[in-house]
Length: 238
Image (cartoon, rainbow, N blue to C red; front, side):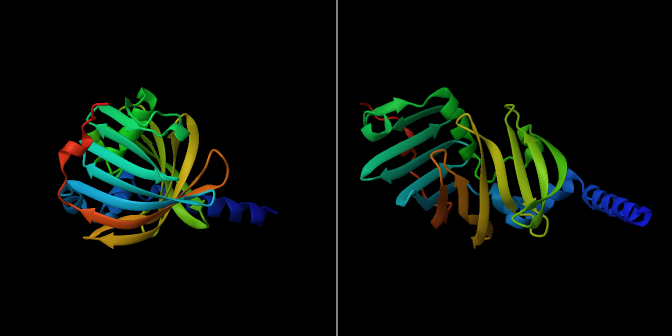
């Protein structure tokens, strides 16, 4: 019994040392290098992404145009009805069809929804260049994500939002994110990373739907630093 006790204690100590052997900055630096390196990431000014959302047997196409750090426009088509969400600086607007509680006309985005959407202006997440952004990071430890070791980092943004990032301990790519979305706790799984212009993007994202089942996002096209007409971010008159 004593042998088993000391063996278990030794394993626990070794596990603790393996986590503490790397600092937050070392883990974050390896993450930045894994997705492309700071030089490449800082040179990304625009992103255009086409995705397909699979939910409750439906396939919903979406298009996102991002002016990094400045503006974002997302368009999707639900059962033939167009939905638009736009963040332009610190303001936001949207167009919702009647089936989603809207009128089909442009309307201001509610403050709580805008707060969630603003994060999309930063497509590479709160870990990249985190000190300059005013974010704080705590290394919680090592945990399993889909059976693989992952570093659990707790991020507190400058705005006070808490995000739990899980980085694969071998690849240093994000495998899971937990955060509060629209007032509800949720998590997103990231997988199937592919290289585009020297930058790795997760081509598959999965999250639980509040209505039941899962939502799967599959990336079909990415354009880095393509031309963007900034007029698409301006709220049209009714």
